[in-house]
Length: 214
Ligand SMILES: N[C@@H](CCC(=O)N[C@@H](CS)C(=O)NCC(=O)O)C(=O)O
View 1 (cartoon, helix red, strand yellow):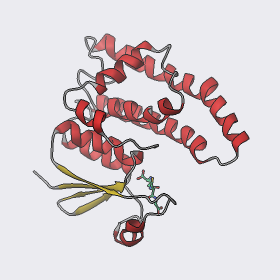
View 2 (cartoon, protein in one colour; view 1 turned 45 degrees about the vertical axis):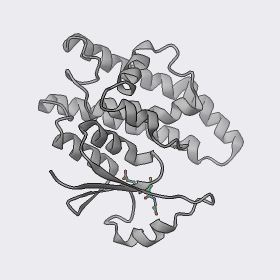
View 3 (cartoon, protein in one colour; view 1 turned 90 degrees about the vertical axis):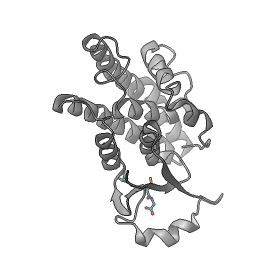
View 4 (cartoon, protein in one colour; view 1 turned 30 degrees about the vertical axis):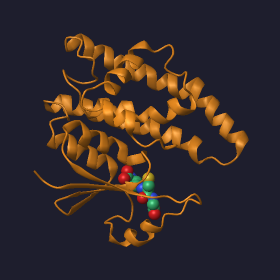
């Protein structure tokens, strides 16, 4: 078994889906978290940056070889562990969900990075009225279709948990922290989230993971 080391800041951010993938498999990995000071600085990063291939994090080290780009890391790990879909078509469906969630992440990032309070409120209101409903519609359609085709598996693609499910779960963690009621009228998405949170491989990690704003 290769030696895995995942390097990122001490937040969920772009490393949390890889962390969930590694945790799900039960494989031991080094979860290297760089501490961010209260002023936002990260001294360890200043030293490490020049050693990272793209000068950004996350980086996954596999037996010392370095891999950049969070979504590449996700796909690599999912392929390694059989969590990427069983056929070429299922694989494309998994990637479709992952890319859809990346679109949502980009929309939510607009709220995170906006400094002007008036504009921030406008973005929040747009998230609620336009953006979340659009993504709920997309996800519910995919989930329902897969339920019909896969004997009510409860997952987004095929008959078992894949990267798609972890991607949906994690991408909504931050939106639910700022808008806790958004799943209220979306029972299937609530149930899906609960399924991930109570998964026997993930429950303990999710319950005990460090609480971070993002
Ligand atoms: N597309 C890249 C983006 C990586 C990225 O922007 N990482 C940020 C943290 S989320 C970073 O390392 N920032 C520190 C810096 O640029 O010095 C990915 O998904 O991995």
